[in-house]
Image (tube, rainbow over all chains, first blue to last red; front, side, top):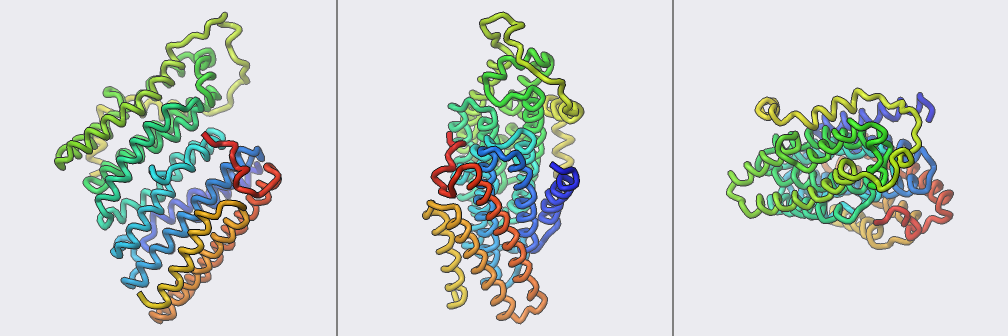
Length: 348
Length: 98
């Protein structure tokens, strides 16, 4: 792609999210979302592969529908209450519609079907952008309207998301689909705690972004998109394969790693709000996710293919990928748990 | 609910229903999206007329500009799909299913 065009696209991608962050008016927030969608479409379809084009089309249709629903709900709110302010969204119909639209926009469970298919059609860099940067703008909106949202809708979305994210990933062999289902499950954790402690939602989003960046960058460094190729990833970079195992377990939420921090705090918050049943279901659904992360770890670190090693080493070119982001995100994904009090103090 | 509110809401919901339930051609999906955006255009114009909020009279034009961009992106994707899949039927977009 032409570097000038690429620079313009990346700049508009940043500008869309920034506009949504900075806006207090629904029309401006909608414009930011639209700029975001329109800017990532050429990035997604730049290889004219049928899968990429199909993923782009599906992404475009869902995002355009969700954005139109957001604008429709805010127009309804303006007709009923006369205000366009994001924080003053009070009409119940508008709130319910916007909850559904934002769920569709970021891929929460009953409206999640587009996410694995779209992510499967993209290359890993665009997939990384899709599963991190593109989540920020909808989250900025949903956190602003969370005081007015119905608690039952939030709980249902959160529980459904974690369960679907866990069940859906079990039978997948494609890494990007597994990461998409892991994204759905993490989004469920973020949504379930939104009504009690929005700062925990932010913390979960931040740690999820760090961990999923580490996972995507690792997969990109070993250029693997299937579980099969993970089994020979250690021939390319043995230390990276060992660390990737740990960052996958961090995504699963095992105690000494960063991924445990949001799960711990959210379960504590749910228990404090005397919702033990919800907390139990969330904790058990994390086990479902942990199963497929463990399967990836098994393929990556504990399997040696039953043939001679030098014949199993895949052909590879010298990688030109910058290793600094990979190193930073991997370290952050592994070792942030002792910094929990500092991170919490920063967010509250 | 005023008659105006009812009419643009039903127009939008009809468009949304068409998009959600009539899944044969990509072109019809794009037309449904465009219908939704036009009903929103009418809603925004009538809102600023009814409340005499002259400061908001630019909002419908901005909406129209953005929906035109969106429609052109959709048409570009229609062309791309026709070139890669040979047709614009949504049934053929099945390469990525689980």
